[in-house]
Amino acid sequence: MKDLTLGMVIAVWEEMFGPALFWGMAGAAAVVTLLYLYVLIRDRRVSWRKFLLAQLAMPFGAAAAVGFVWRITHSGLRDVGGPVDVIVLMGVAAAGAVGAAVLVYTAQSLVRRPAAEE
Image 1 (cartoon, rainbow, N blue to C red):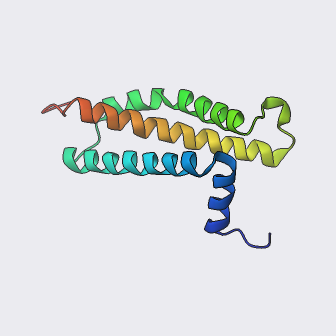
Image 2: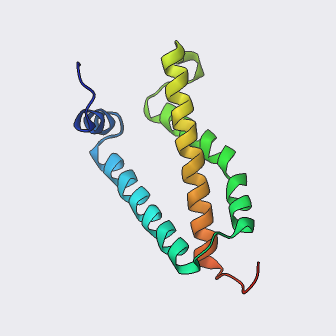
């Protein structure tokens, strides 16, 4: 493994999660991202109230992402063996936190249209 390429990373993730789950998650992430961009363009501004509520979801998203990865890989806290494992788990937690915030902000914006002044 001399070079780290996108194809190799996708192959590893497909092996870890299975092709159906991996591509399902990738598709869901793409849909949520497109809806988020739609909401930002539609509203022409960021609602800071919705943004704050979305940030409150971040710790839950981080914990859910780490728990999900541990469940899929049949491992847990006892299997964290070194600094690289901690760095990977921090990356998974960060991705889960950001994903939860984007999902909550998007859901709030799609359910409740922006007021004239918020």
